[in-house]
Image 1 (cartoon, rainbow, N blue to C red):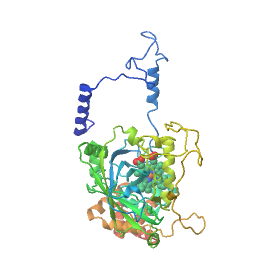
Image 2 (image 1 turned 135 degrees about the horizontal axis):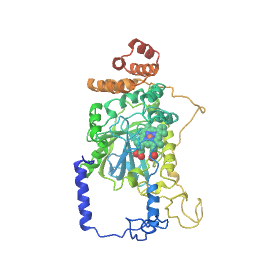
Image 3 (image 1 turned 120 degrees about the vertical axis):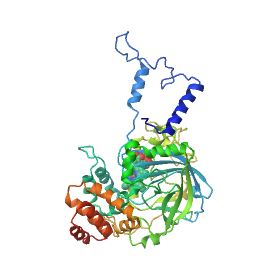
Length: 509
Ligand code: HEM
């Protein structure tokens, strides 16, 4: 059996025959450019003697091989990337000064889709949220919209993220993912009920990256030239439609091709079937946001009944030439913002603003933003300097600002917007938790078949939990979201329904 699907086999064969037929010979060199005389036989002392340290080609080749890996992403390690273009279609200059949204402007993009929990090369068939990160190379700097396929998240405060990920990752003692561990964690996080309900629906196993929507999850702030603010959520709608797999279908695919998402995206683009998404926004004024009966900046919530407006479209049309150089070394970060787009006060987003750029300093190094995939397409001009692997091009003796000798200065029109504040510093959860309502709304929006799939997917994992208390607490959350949902989980797990109802009655939404 071949490792590659038919379409990939054909293109590999084509590549081989082209290189055999017409390529001019290039002399093989070491990294210093010196020609290599023999790349097949090490230099030895006589016919039977040891290998010589003076074989600089052998030594360099092994040294470079030994260092081929950079740390994989701590989450979202498995991903696949593609290039394309975003075309803005609606005048939103009353909302934002961002140049990327001027109608008709075409902005090159790089997109990285991903799964979250398991490592690079793990099966793409596993249940997981899917990352949908877009890097826009705008004329005023790179803007990264780093979202997911699902519109909400498990938690609403960044301080919980490392614990959540530890519970979801394979256990430290066995290296196996274990529902006992993550449901133990989630039984203390009732706000996760909405996201868990979506992840355990068939949306947790998309058919392909092409047939998947994307969401900002968080609200961001649009800021116009007058400094006025609107809160905005983004939604990429797939023009291929949203398609999902049942767990049975996902298992069947996994048995023959656990890379189905990557195969599909690369194959479609190779065949010229360029996938497309429309970008929609929901917009709220600060007053409208404050009037919601839940916290509108809570990442466990959608904004129901807020109309969506289409503001542009994206097409993906080119595969990377080298997955390591481009996809693996890409560094998408919510802190890569541009004039006109600012972070909201969402506590989860605020943590992400620090975390991504920080992990990338570790993962690809101090000067990782100079790599071709991450470099801004406009001129970068500042006095950040030195550090490992710096390939900058600073000239002259002025590396400070202000100076009488170099015309480099900040421009006040790009100052951050101002936020009015009252109160004291505090450490407390949001007052308007509403942990269960939207989970129930989502459950009721599913067809009977989809509800049955959700319950069976959930029971598959929750059924493995040995701690009865954890099992009952989790089921009480589903019961609180929707009584029918709770009853279905009780039946699937053969639990005591009266005990679940009693626990749920103590919960406050
Ligand atoms: C406080 C909460 C979160 C923290 C601390 C966090 C942290 C991280 C970290 C450290 C990475 C690896 C980045 C890299 O190595 O380049 C990552 C990747 C990613 N995260 Fe998060 N994350 C959080 C929540 C979220 C949320 C809510 C979303 C979706 C809206 C999300 C979407 C992604 C995506 C799409 C990637 C992969 C980016 C890529 O393709 O390179 N994360 N996250």
